Length: 346
Ligand code: ATP
Ligand code: MG
Ligand code: FE
Image 1 (cartoon, rainbow, N blue to C red):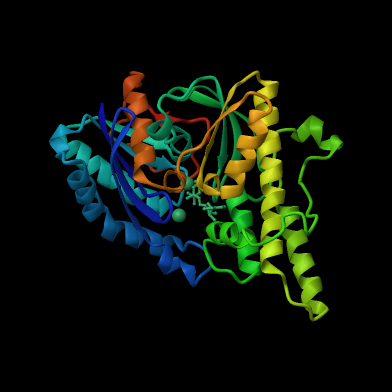
Image 2: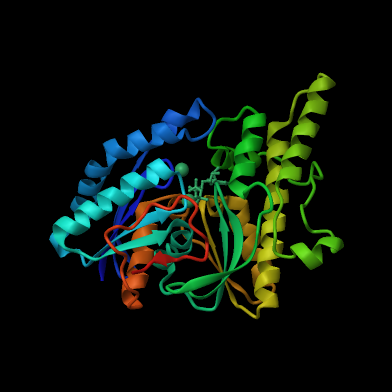
């Protein structure tokens, strides 16, 4: 099916068009620069930027794919989770286009879309798979038996998300926003073994209740304390070494728990999605550790890991192919949508 996907859950206005697993267009407009001086996404600013960008981004995607709205089989849109005002712009636009062009509308979960996007690069997802979702607002391990119909959460962060930890650590190092890509870059000149930062929820006592959960807030505090102590002593802060050691702590825990989840569930495929999946060290470490256990790692190219419209279209295509019922035209924007709701049906 030819499916158009609209994404407006945070600060990227994205419209993607796919035919089955083939990506035809991925138009993106970002308001990230407007938020940078605030050190985080400002919801009102994001909503206004989506309003201004949605129609031109839609047009760019259609032009890029060389199709018209009449050619499209279905329209998918992120209906949650995310910023309420930002989601509303995408949902309202999708309803307008669906109504005008008489196309079925699919309200989808942004997080499931982060998992689905890999199919555009590597083809159909072998199921069951373990999905590790690591983004700005979420860090979860999921068992995926059939992505079109649901996912089973195995564990999640009990405090900060992985991307949030990257952003907070970058901020305390004075590196700018968003922090993930900057730390990734600075870490390349640093020694990942130079500072022993804590690995949250990996102690033997955590195995029972938190085997597949994450905690990154203690790590962030440990980095802050370490940096403060250096400054108090009047010593320069070795930004590259701190970045590399922090990044190593995050990637060590993420990959160890993801592989444990695969082995415990007898699953041979690990798919990684969300903005942090763009991290160069995470990609290498996951690949190395998985190979030792005969587990295949699937992670899309970095541009598909962060928010975009193609991921929404990819999930939409999967839903259409699986014969899942579309959403009604009174589809709500659900800022707190549960991870287990893949799409809003009926
Ligand atoms: P969610 O998907 O949970 O709603 P979001 O949509 O804001 O959150 P994404 O766009 O999926 O998040 O990811 C953004 C996050 O990814 C930011 O926290 C950013 O710092 C992080 N990130 C992006 N690139 C990298 C990288 N190379 N290394 C580490 N983190 C990265
Ligand atoms: Mg973003
Ligand atoms: Fe996201």
